[in-house]
Image 1 (cartoon, rainbow, N blue to C red):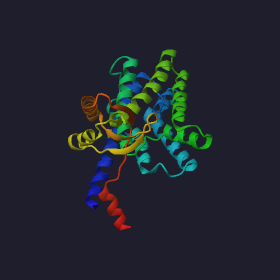
Image 2: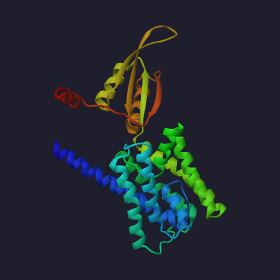
Image 3: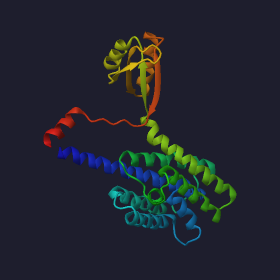
Image 4: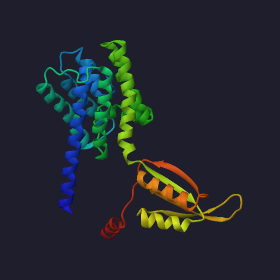
Length: 292
């Protein structure tokens, strides 16, 4: 058990480190050369670097430390070591890249393409952090402060903070850069959501059919998927019907719909999108119950 825990912690450390390195690389190679202030601490640091005699990495580090202190003072210790680690690691990697590539120029040669590449790459890094329950800190903390003390919805708070940071580019940039920063902030939010939630999206399929037993067997034996059976009463005829509810992935969903359409063309199906599904295996539950 201890060996498995050690391996899991090691894997967690590797994944979080990789996510932070990818995020820092996206900032350095695509965001900084174009001077885009896409809603993040790094975006704010890019604006401030044009007003202060400090590199972006140093300003990012200072801002992250300030936000961490505010978080601990105003919210508590819920951020944990992972957020502290990533908040420090990202500007450190940026500083290392600044030393390795002192004359860093835009790879794409176009601010719009830089914005797109940044959004894709940083979203991958954020997704890796998210799957290990980590955060890049910074504006996440600012949004949580707004959420706690001003009762602003967390998603809305993130958007508000991000747009405010993007608009700070008006202090140092032209109108085109400001507009690209705002568009990039909005696009980045969409791509991050897709990276985090879209890849694990499942379908909840509810089926009412006279061939419920055949469909149940298909789910169990062919798709190797579980299902739940409900007794439903039709409002029109007040007759009992069996409803099958199953949560399947995208590949299984296509097979299930094809099979149901073939075995019972008159079957009634409703489909819902499920972003996350949690379950506790029986053996884990029994082990904990016995230990308790």
